[in-house]
Length: 184
View 1 (cartoon, helix red, strand yellow):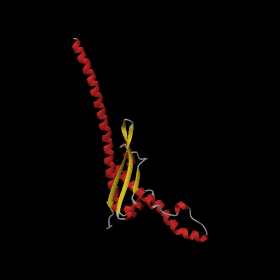
View 2 (spheres, one colour):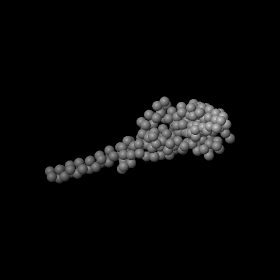
View 3 (cartoon, one colour):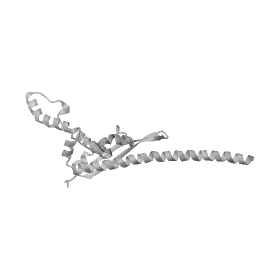
View 4 (tube, one colour):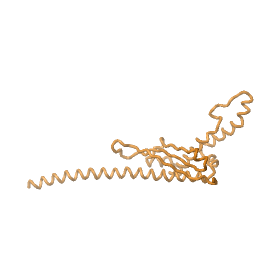
């Protein structure tokens, strides 16, 4: 009888140890399945946005962007008015002197990227996947762009559902490139 009680106690200890590792392993897989899903979505959206801009005329994309149209109009107006004001002895405000093409390109890319992640509510869809939209950065390589290829570097953080050993987010870098349409 005493031997049976000892075996039951050992069985309970073994079961609790195995159950702990089983639950830990399941949470680990669930965590990284979410990370994999976010990486897949970013990969797809970045490539689609790059191809769209490469095939579409970049200036048309600039005109369609939600924030760059106003900036482009201000840039065109200041180019026309600036020589007249200089002739009269006035100088334009520094931030309106030039049209910032890099910021406009990045805004176009960001708009398309979020559209391909989740349509009109792309930022919300990205947040639901765990992508930290506050820290995401889009960088278009100007050197490669002048050579006829659009290459974009995307740096983003993915928040983990369950922190593991003090790790609550992971930082990733994604590159997407495409030959510009009509460029040799």
